[in-house]
Image 1 (cartoon, rainbow, N blue to C red):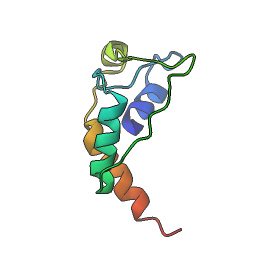
Image 2: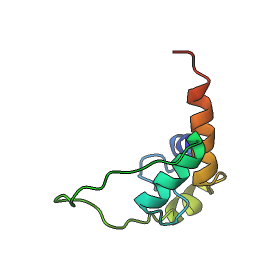
Image 3: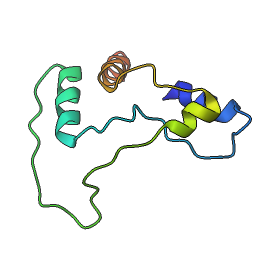
Image 4: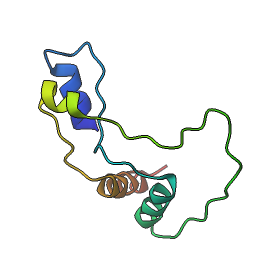
Length: 93
C-alpha cells in the first residue's frame, strides 16, 4: 500500500483517486483466518445480525492504477498482514 500511495502522490495524474488492491474478493471470514495465521493463533469471531448499510461483497478494480501509475500489487494480503504484525510486535510500547 505504501508503494501505491507514493506512486499516487508522485504521478503526473496525482489529483485523482485510485483503488490500490489485489483486485481479489476476500470475505471477512477469510480475513479473520489470515489475521489469525499472522498472529499465530486461531481467532473466534462473534457473529452479530447484519446492520443497515453493511457491505456484503466488494472487489476494488485497480485497473486505473495500473494504467495511469504503472502500479501493481507486489505483496499478497497474507504476506502484508504477516509483515504488519511483525512490525507492530517489534515496537516496544
